[in-house]
Amino acid sequence: MDTLLADFASGADLLLFLAASAAIFTGTLVQGATGIGLGMIAAPILLFIDPRFVPGPLLVLALAVSILIAYRERHAIDFSGLIYALVGRVPGTIVAGLTIAAIPLQLFGLVFGVMVLLAVALSAGRWVVLPSKRNLVVAGFASGYMGTLTSIGAPPIAIAYQRAEAPRIRSTLAVFFVIGAAFSILTLAWFGKFTLEQLVISLAFLPALLAGFWASRWVVMWTTGPWTRYAVLIISGLSAAILIFKSVGATGG
Image (tube, rainbow, N blue to C red; front, side, top):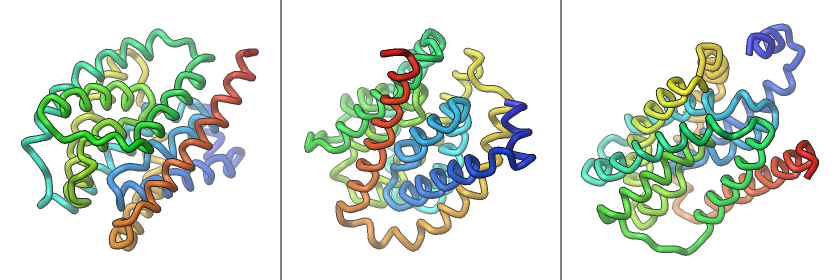
């Protein structure tokens, strides 16, 4: 990670840094407008650029944008539903910590890509789920597992709230991700998968994140239709497919 920081500072990897910043800006813009998007858009691209960007640094950025969204739309938060979702998030995060410690590095990109495609399939489906206590616990577990392993934990919990009003979806997901991302980061640190250097890397992308969040305020009024969700799914699916292709080639599959 020190080498990566030095490369960015010297400008050796400036184009890669700008590409990663663009992915974070776009993901933050979409998440600020719809409630999801940062992980699904940015994670495959960041992992393609450098595996060390995911999941730790991206989780820090997800934590930051979630705090901003939760504060902006704090009036619409569904606190009662959050409790049950968080009950499921804790064991899901722990299981993910055990998983990431056991996956060989050369296979992580393949597993990551498959899970992104799974997230896309869940989001694209017409499966209607009501936010009952049981469903929220199950969604919280799935979100905790996927979010800790891949930085993409939005689809399961978003599916549970898919029939809610947009402000309620954005605000409730944001609070869920604030608590969940913080716990995921602590879990990764416990298993030795999150370091101080990764925190420094995430701070380097804060300007792109803040710019994306600022821009999202002008897009919120246009997110009542399905076009934003379709864009997220298409970009995420293509990114995951490229990542899987690259990982299969690297492993000789």
